[in-house]
Length: 325
Image (cartoon, rainbow, N blue to C red):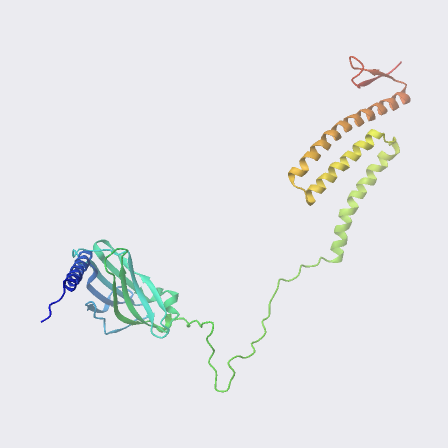
């Protein structure tokens, strides 16, 4: 007779201890359980039409057919199997699985204190994802929590939605339309006509002519009216070199602004603009002083007045006119 070796005995003992620890850990962590499961069909006024008590994991054998204004209500209690107390899992949903397309939709379950839960499906306010379906769905309760406690999945029944509340099932991208035998799968579709914005309305020639006449004629009329009074008494003088330099500096400032508007940065524009601005201010002061002297000199010649320097030292450039008797 051959006895087992010491190694085999040790391996068996380790496996037995591991199984005991796993079983104890699972028992300590517990699992989500449900009790007092009640599935009811109610009318719009809240009166119960049909009700059934369920026992997990046995599903309901009734095909729950909803009317356009009925309510399907599921109520149950949630407990933790490790201590038998009420428990509120973080994830609680009812999954709707379409019997034809297998498309799924999750709807939340309301959970109150001490694990009391309720789910209402109202025919009058069905979600669009459920309405656009075949109308027959398998209902599965899903409960879970982000911890070591075991989740729960319970398929508890089948529901048929009212036909007036359903929407057409959307076609997928590669679905082919129904065709008769011998017809091609793809045919030429009608041309798509696009409607663009209409063009701007053109103003009539008469209205345009009147507007142009007002815009152009009014300034010209004002110019002629004022020019008839100013031109006979206008006396012109030839420009001095300083005046020409002042005009050139102003043109230079305009050119710098144009350059800045085209492609210059602000740091490229400011230094030459400030420098030329200071020069233009100085030249302008000198040019205006010369114009003032020329104007006073012309007035002296025409009236016989005497030009007098009104500054203290005679270097200020300010002059006055004193009429002689």
